[in-house]
Amino acid sequence: MIDIDRVRKRPGMYIGDTTDGSGLHRMAFELVNNAIDEALAGHCSRIDVLLHADGSVTVRDNGRGISVDRYPGRDKSIAEILMTELHAGWKLGIETRAMRGHAGGVGLAVVNAVSEDLRLRIWRHGVEHAMHFRRGEPEAILAIVGKATLGDGKPRHGTEITFTPDPMIFSNTRFDAATIGRHLHELAVGAAGTTISLADQRGDEITQTVYRN
Image (tube, rainbow, N blue to C red; front, side, top):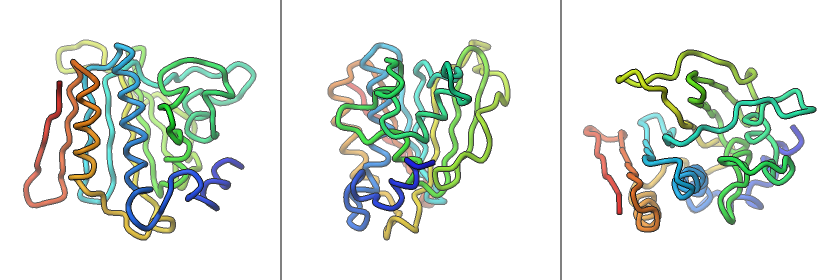
């Protein structure tokens, strides 16, 4: 895991300031921006962002889902390579959802590297896949954990990432809902037909804001 170690030793090189909140929020923005890429390509109509009471953040979309296939010549899934290797899309040479990363983005591997805990769920081809990481390192390989069905019986599709910022890297790990909301509003303006939801579950009452154009 050379790439992960490199990011953890010098996180500021990849995400910016780890003390003023800018680097912290860039983690969430990276995941949302990847989902927006999927929406702009016509494969995603809804993106949900959840701020949990335990300090973790979930970003979920109903796109195609990150590829779960094994990459030829590698004993790893494409999803694992994306989560653990810098510039994976460029190195693999595959143009798929979340392979190239959002323009100017830091990549999924960087978000994983600076997370204390990260859980990946992928709904694709009628089944649900899951993988768990601790400080960038996989706890186990990507595995099928069940069927991917919705309440109406239709196959579910998309990607969900829940991460907890690492307090060993960030001096402040509390996300600001207003800062995230502004970013979501800006993205919604340019993503007509996409519904973006922000739910803040950290207070006594859950607040939810929906952005759409």
